Image (cartoon, rainbow, N blue to C red; front, top):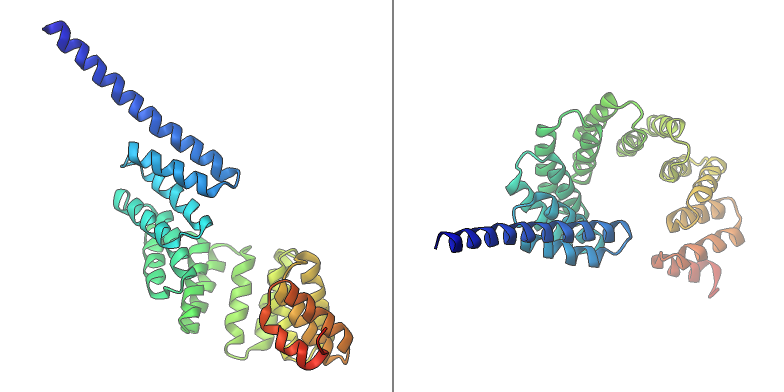
Length: 272
């Protein structure tokens, strides 16, 4: 009887060990698939790992990231929520959940998550920058600038924070202030196409058409498939009496997916 009990205990221990190893194996495969761009496959493997190890926060976190890539945003939020239940001090889970909520326009909820993430990690420049973006979306521009200020205080090389602060200043018609921010952003990172786009838009508003054109050209050099850059460069060329060039850019913008430009093309350029 004692021998039988010993054998049963040994069987139980081996079964638990195999159970645990299988869960980690699915996690490993899921990570490999994620790194190879097979996000659907990675979700399936992470789900299997969760069946075998339901208290592993890393599996939920990784599955949430994969679900973001497959467009399962509600599912991603649920998984990040599970991570937080398991590990309430995981600021990255709050951060990622906030990013997803921001994507689906749940700005108030995103703000709450960023507040919590900052409470847990108050030295991360990007957290203040992202929270500033949420506040800007909620039309709380003054508060957004305060967050961008803090982001730059924590990391003076945060070129994106300068760009976003420039956009915030535009909301107050502070064009020169905005240009100064865009200039600083480009000084730090001259290969970030978005900053040229925003600086070009500012120059366009200020009727500096040649300056705007130069920025859009540079932006397209860095990001040649950006439909918005083609659209606004087309607007600039039209201002410069280059209708042919404007129509070419608008058509390229349409080709890249900016369908709302089709009416403008028909009215201004004809059917082509």
